[in-house]
Length: 567
Image (tube, rainbow, N blue to C red; front, side, top):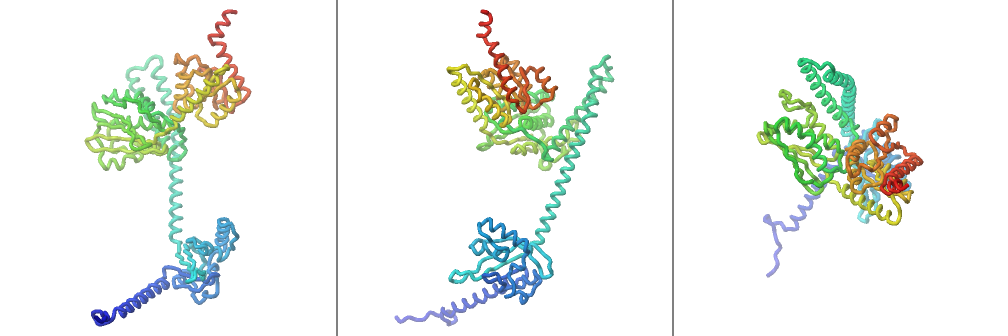
């Protein structure tokens, strides 16, 4: 069968239709190209490979104030840019590419010439001499043989965005300044209020315990003064805390902290308040076994605040349940659930606003409305989160989520290694163990280095008093060096605990503290420290004290006492 030419419905060959479509596409592309080049919103400049302007569209004319005829084929595109900006860009590129780049068109086109996409911001100069910031995208133009033939620059005026950014930065700076001024004012007022409040509370207590005893009527008045005074002191402390957090001046002493220990301490502190109101408390029964890296005192402050609220805003004969849940790997959540009235959605939205008591200011419950705000700030500073789940009539669950740390486990392992090393060192020679309790790594390293110079000594260390007390009980070192300003339990408190422990009471404890004024030294010795060393350490005094302490230990040992009795 002979082939027949295919025809369209209107009798035209397919090839003719294809040609028409191709021409239509070309016309459409041309229209697009014309629309782009004629756009008044974008500055489009094309140059040859040396930077000489070859195309200057209407957008560029409107933006820069030049007519195309004034520039095309006559000046370089770099002549429209701020010379100082070009010089700065040239210096940056010269360092980046380790090659000298001139502060002319080369500085504008170098990246594009290397095939690197380049968008930069630079001040551009109008015909009238005024300058404005422009964002410029520059692309290399190449022919079919991949030879560089020129560059295409597309620019937009960035003045509005820069102005908005500047206004925003100014507004933020003003807000920050106002916030700091507010925090400074609150802090100043808190400090100013303390001296008169101290006098009020002090003299009221003197009246209460004076002779003759106050009458019944006077006692009621004194009770009111003291109640209001202590409440005012609590308010001042909360305001000062909030001011310190918001001003960024709050200093935290973070350490690996046992959640079991902290929760047990909070339980002891809050039980009395719960019993007075008939609220039952339930805490985790088993050892939680996890450590979190926080400021021990501040974490207790947050938990006590949440527990106190759970008790105050509970129903009569209600309950508070504390639980700890590992929500995901590396995170643990402390939940405090109450059986109170619960909170509506509107209250939940306003919960963490300063001085907002959600209408409870009309009740008998005292409060400042800033405890939760401070708690939130403190937890966030310690890289944690705080939240609440509540419904009206179903009570509330306030929770704090923190990161679990493995540092404590490493510390246990390191301590066991230190103890083993001490035991090995003791074999075949009379070696004595020195335990140093110090939270500052630099001080710890210094003392470790000093002790290492003495082959008759072996070194044990602990970074907080709780852990140091445990080590003293387990390893019974010959002497203890103790910092006084320790996180959590202070050196003074730790000394008292050791003195009351029949296992460790015999170990002499030497203070090694930065508190160097005579009164501090006297108070330390009166508290029971065997000796008192001050920082910075005097090496001669340090070793003299160590020798005197160990000599005392040897003199008190059973062998020495037997030998003395034989004489």
